Length: 448
Image (cartoon, rainbow, N blue to C red; front, side, top):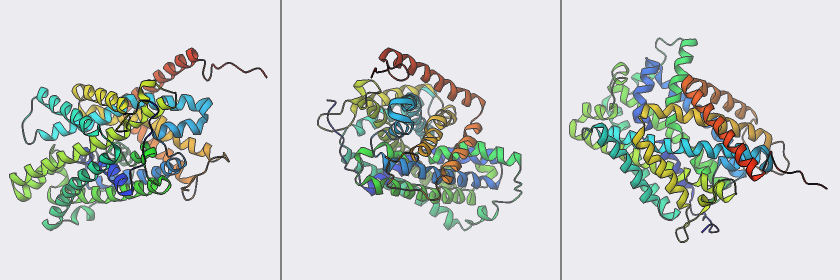
């Protein structure tokens, strides 16, 4: 039924857990050697600092928008309101849903593919069995998410406990090894801040930022959060602060045992790290825990993204079937099943390296930069109330736009073109849809 409503059942602890398990997916484990390889030196830690800085600044933008419009769908509502619900906002919000229907399944698929990749440390997989594993992960996630939101909140907390145990073991092992401060002392060794360094930092930050994505997941669940004016910004800043500390400590821990020039070539660097310290059995155990973390990430990402097509459909801007809410469990089941189904197909078709840069390239212009510009527009309106106010407005917004542009151009020419093609196709589809429905910019003028 379409007229059932979502329920506010998620508190600060649950929303923070949902954010953090989305952020700490398979990302930091598979991108750690990638970042080191790109930076090719002990200064690789700066890429993780850069990712954290961008996340903190951008979270200020999300906090203002999320508390002003605490609804399901997050950016869909932000873009619609910022650019005018009856004007350009129709196009911008449509483009966001359009790209979400492509990139959201890519995000889900990337975590599932990463899961299968790391699973091969335990059991050698052929290309076919690897795809079967990644597809099965998506299916199991759909089964777990097919329930009430308060039950999902409890599952999220349970999954987050597994994440904390994994990270604590990895970090604690490095500390007890006795060489923990060595990577920090060497961070600026041979460092020359020139064009080559900034270029490498840009490419490396594409990978590190991918690992931070998810700090805003709470905004997509705005209609299901208790006291959103406080819990939305708190959960985001707590998530980013906690994850930044965990990522830096994990990188330092690993490279205090495995030198950076060796770690950059290791596909299963975390498992190798534990193997070197405690042996093969312990390495197998930590690999299982890493798979737990990856699974938790797919769970959280799928939960958040399923609310976006629902919000657009409930608003009359997308296919009506996506607005259906389960009559007894009160969640948007059609949206969940469709996104999950597309993610399942993507998990069978693509390789992990193909999706990380593509995910960012598709999202930056419309979602991150688009809503940052939109926030500036909203501040000019007197009818919008911002329960959270960022310090030094609009400086953080301008800084966020500049940083996102830097990341966008660092994704590479092919990914930039792909992102622009997706946007261009979305504009064409919207204009055809608007012309048939006689909506903006083809609506008939009323005679007064």
